[in-house]
Image (cartoon, rainbow, N blue to C red; front, side, top):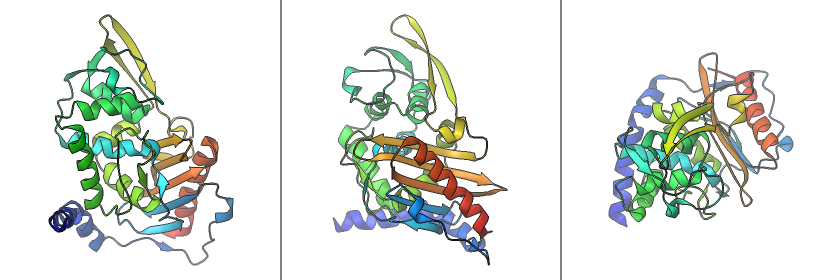
Length: 288
């Protein structure tokens, strides 16, 4: 256990060193002289945080260290670990009955074939659970090793209150906090492939099962696809009955970016609206 802690600490330094160097020369945003406090009583989200995407500085917190069920925000870490295995994007993969865990799914029968890229894209765009399970199964790692890597990466990112038990988010024992998820979102959205597919409105591909079937998956993030008042540069939704509505986004305005995480909003609509409101509040009340 002591050795593992030391490894996690050293790995964390290696992972975060470039950001730390950047933070040394880039000042964190500061509140304006006439700033207005955010009306926390208006939030239905049970916890929330806003951080500066460059420095990681917290700009707003609300129960940011309370443990919450992750739901499909889990898939951000799944994507991170899957990419670390250096996948062949054009490789053909096959959906299996074992990949079915319930919830949102890519609607194809077991035996359907498509590329690894299609599976990765579907996981992040449409939040399909069976493709998240497929990413783990085809990673070259045993399931327990893949999950161990998810938890080790969480430790290296300083996500001390986070634990993963499955890669899809269907397991209610996947638990984290708004603060930890902001760290994950900051790291994950810095990856161009995760950024690309979490900001893709819709994606089309062909599956062979064995006959060819044209498939289209659509993004679950309404702020990306139908809201012209906010510029999303990374995002992931999540929902279970136990978690309610979760959302993590990276938002850009005038060349500045913040990461907003809201957990446990009462409805999908409120999840989007409260996240958007927090982003706008940060841009109005902070200067960079």
